[in-house]
Length: 67
Image 1 (cartoon, rainbow, N blue to C red):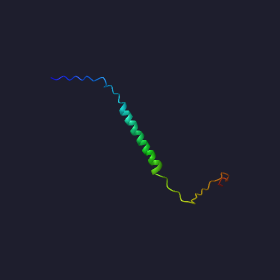
Image 2: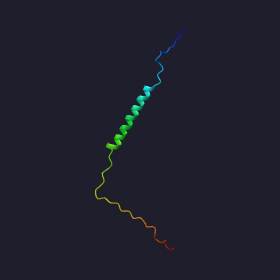
Image 3: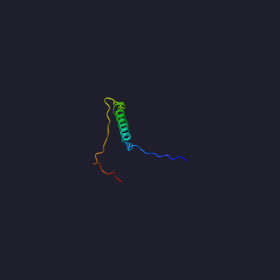
Image 4: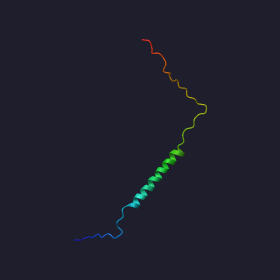
């Protein structure tokens, strides 16, 4: 029969702060990459010069139709 005793050293109280720091850096890089992609790479389509859109809006003063 074997008995294994694990006695951690004095510096084994790592809280995982380095892992959190790496995760935050990766999230910032991904967010910056997405911002750059949507801001500069995926540009809006060019509008044709001289294009107009005509919309007729009723004035609201028209009489009700006769019944």
